[in-house]
Image (cartoon, rainbow, N blue to C red; front, side, top):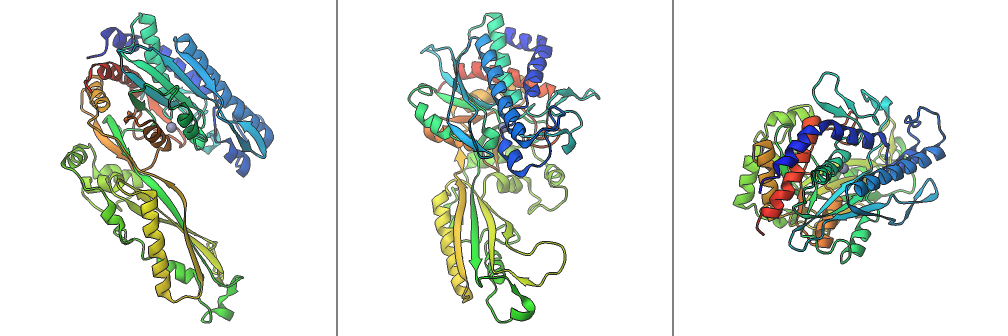
Length: 501
Ligand SMILES: [Zn+2]
């Protein structure tokens, strides 16, 4: 079922109002990562052009996140949504216990004959300071003066643009007196950029209450792979992060005095780390390769259909250093296969100069990106055994310890589920082309929480382009993506209502 044409023309006629709504949202500096500001005291906060003490920085950011929650509550109420703020506990900032930003839940429509769609977004943003290299003040939505249609501002694409997109859809329907084709439940959080603390507990506690009755879920909080092709995202890699600690003498030693007389922890560590992965990217830990789910024909076809050029990745990494020159192999390397990266060595001498120290204890850090059917536990069992076996072969008198510091499971959704089919049709009708089916190489932990706890099919339906620069300086959303994104979200609802399960 195509979207009501009155809805589509309403969106076209109200672009200026929609940009105003986004502009208001961006002007509220709802930075949730204030703990980082406080603990590292990077730079003074520039938002109010005052030189404030650290304590006041914390206070002002907490208040801005709250203010953004209030703005959202007010908007939802005006649009006919029954919304509630829920406190989900406290956390410690600079030694002070403060409330976590509230989760905002809302519902509109409760017709048992309609499907119920759950949507998620976040109203907090990453930190941003003009002096980090922003062209314009980060908390003022600024159109590119060259007329490219880019709208610069922190949160413009991550995630205020998409959240405002949903509000735009609701506003159009309310003002046109149109009934929504589905029941909508919504969940907006204010801690996404700071670890989504306690959101999992909240989902768990509301599983049989607020979230009961949801048929499927849509999250708009990721991006197109490139700048031209809309996509639906149906998988995320997980991650296991490890440390290998090797300790020997109880103090750092001088190589002129002790070199040639002791087992050196760094030598042991380098030897082990060199055995984890080949320079061609092949993981050498036995057992892991065998766990990877076989690639189906449907999956391969989806990778082959992705619009992607090797030049895209060369540009993104700033050089021709890819493992393969084949696009499908490269895409699967990023999205479909596990990878092992060596990150660093704690305790190693790393300053400029030529110090002749023998570090007494070092920690090697590496991580493995997980894909189906690798689990946190199965991979960890193989890693621990491998490292211990390899260490034993060294015949060293040092001690080794290897452990997981954090883990996140991979996620995959059924891309042929009716929600995906609906989004596919909506993309075709709004953009005039079929979407790419992508997976992300990184993780979006809330996706996994919703999918696993609620047992729902989750659709990741990005609004912004691959070059939007979420989290970096000069974050932007293109006006066209914001406006067509609004149409896309609305049209998806209509298609969802019409698509058979
Ligand atoms: Zn986000």
